Image 1 (cartoon, rainbow, N blue to C red):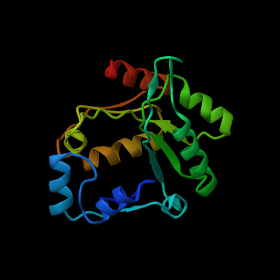
Image 2: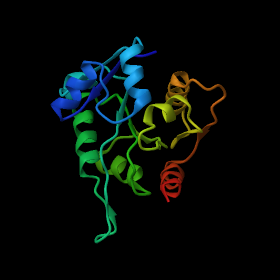
Image 3: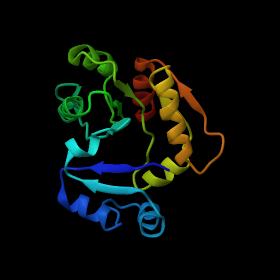
Length: 181
């Protein structure tokens, strides 16, 4: 329903998406890319990809370090800083697993309110299916822009009456961590 540009640092993933091939093992995703008409392309050019964007989703790896008891979130922080530099008006939606308090802390540190959190609940090998048939959509902000983003996610879903919950930021972060547990 919308123009989507996926940005990645690995050329083989970019080439796969642009060739309408799945860069991950996901049967539904492979079939969808092959058969559906989509307004989707991939690029390594973050700057030009986010220009004039209303929403930018950040989904980078966050590994939990058991020795330090912290998440490795440097890639999220780096991408957010770049997005703010290139398109400061965009609403940045973090989908990666993050510690409770991350959004409040980074908003304060980067002096912006344009960052929200929306946890994803995806199973390995079922990412597209879980996006098309979400059990719930949670947005960690109670605002009009959060409501608009939730409706965009629901618009892409194939199941009717998806439960949408707008919560506080820390509540959404905690929901994701408890779901992972």
